[in-house]
Length: 336
Ligand code: NAD
Ligand code: UD1
Image 1 (cartoon, rainbow, N blue to C red):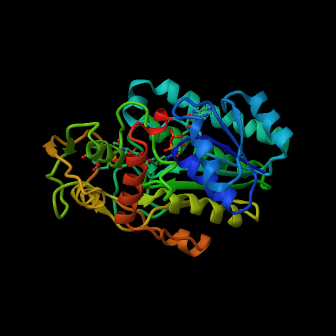
Image 2: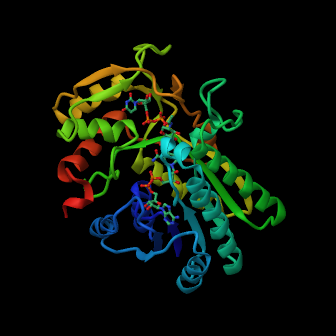
Image 3: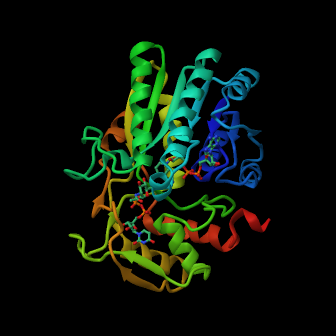
């Protein structure tokens, strides 16, 4: 039995599908602060069987311990956390509490339950401003905002944990830019409020929920002047977690990028989404967003070598699947 924290969220619901499809049993815990329980009903519709769900906050150590014990959990995939960069600057203590204290309580419950296999969702944001590209796992770490610092603190904490008890098996995953949705159109990203990230914003413009996209700068040192990111299909990202679980058969701690190695500019995303949706995406050019970098792109070769995993889906597929989800669920999970 695998415990999935943040299992009702965007990436969590896709990881849940990957696990169930691979034959694992799953217990998902989530406090639903940024998600909807309905996502897991959709997972059941896709997989033909359901994960167990417990409405639990990861900071509630006793409740987490009880789930670990009662469900016979053997490994934890830890995605629960807060992820909005701007909000993390406005309210950093809430981010340290959820992301750092939450992980400390989770680890403490795992120690008591003698569950010592942990996969942690970190982020490429820990690299900060690239000093060279593409970003490999040895690139210096210098996050530029409190959200990124919570991820880096947890990474360091987990490495210290392994140094102190070398029977832990820990995988630290640095995600690049997840986008897209399950091909069924039944699960996808359902941001509460105004999305922070590019692809959900583009999708909401295409469906008519927003009048236009604001492109944060077209004067970067890139071929078309707009920022370049490594967008990775969320289904490929979810599959990466299975490879990581297989790799964790031996004790150790390892850190790996999950990206594609190929970047797309904001304008390329807009064009790909127009093609996928058959709709036009009105946009205007605005000032650069504070903290943005011109290019952020993964070197995914370590993942390919060690995990035998690489992303398979294209930007066109990502946009088509995201659009399928958006079209079927114009108001996300709230319309059911
Ligand atoms: P999400 O908000 O959709 O999912 C996170 C889930 O965690 C939500 O369901 C939320 O309700 C839950 N949660 C938050 N705090 C909790 C708590 N204290 N106890 C229990 N549940 C809690 O976000 P996502 O995009 O699916 O991200 C999953 C993980 O991946 C996060 O840790 C995030 O930082 C990381 N990540 C995401 C991205 C991205 O672009 N989506 C990129 C890099 C890393
Ligand atoms: C952002 C976060 C990063 C986080 C990542 C994934 C910042 C500064 N960084 O990164 O910490 O790990 O999301 O959650 O917030 N864009 C527009 N208009 C928009 C939205 C985005 O032009 O309305 C552009 C951005 O300027 C950028 C690209 O689209 O060039 C991608 O933006 P976004 O989806 O926010 O991802 P990141 O910038 O990589």
